[in-house]
Length: 191
Image 1 (cartoon, rainbow, N blue to C red):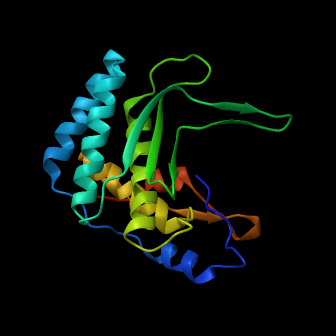
Image 2 (cartoon, rainbow, N blue to C red):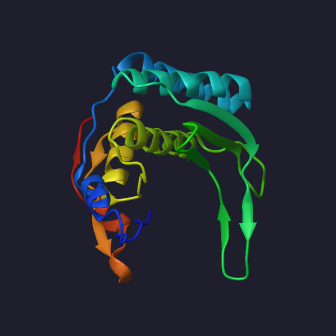
Image 3 (cartoon, rainbow, N blue to C red):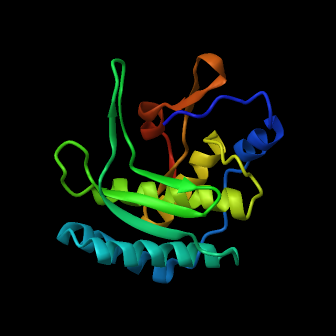
């Protein structure tokens, strides 16, 4: 994961997002139950059941902030774009105007169900975009270190797994990426 560059405009918004490392979390139940149901539905390749569970997680998450829940739509095979210099896949997206989340439940090449951890991580990522726009007044919802910290906190909370302190490495142009070897060597804390 790599952050967006610090923009020339909206620097204050970017820096505010970067400084927000924690979020209020919804009650553990029923969110964790919905996540288990979503994992089972992914394994059965039951798109409708995945949609019901993902929507329920979005409702519970939004309820913790007393904000409208996003509409969640589950789609099939991930879009894939191949250029001369790169190959990209879209795992999910969030529309800042309609507040809709789209998640793709099948891999682009093999068209197999997405791994549960990857799918849940994508849902948490898109829910944090929704939170940025609807509750935190961060209309550009940049991918900052703080954004990734918030999404990771939600993910580990839902899975009831320890949170690792992310270690960041600065790149050219003021961007950062997660240094996974250092992160994995670091300490954990309970969610």
